[in-house]
View 1 (tube, helix red, strand yellow):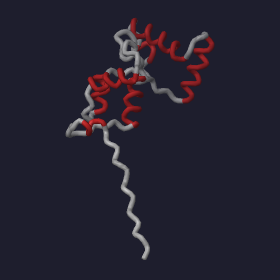
View 2 (cartoon, rainbow, N blue to C red; view 1 turned 180 degrees about the vertical axis):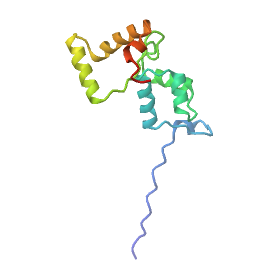
View 3 (cartoon, one colour; view 1 turned 60 degrees about the vertical axis):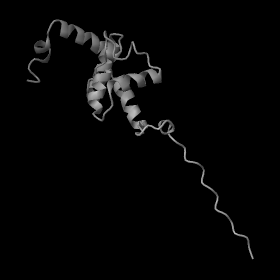
Length: 134
């Protein structure tokens, strides 16, 4: 007669930290959600704008807390003075922009920033676009 083999016990299931304290809801951020919030933060979105953009129950306070947890310099994130704005350009437009900026010894970003500052200050939209987009 051969002895019976016992089934090994499965290892205990790892619990999320919220389960240890009896919270009824387990809230987990996926890597994709964290990456998307980091991406929006890098584009200069404020926590309130990120909350609206996510539209999944994520609050602006939660976003700010994540910034603190991630060690981001909060003075620079969505600061009151400067903010990044994305501009969509085609490949050819970006190449031409890079050539024009290089000719003046500037980065493409600084070249566009200077043009925009002057155009906005003097309300030169009509003069610059010359009805092309109207």
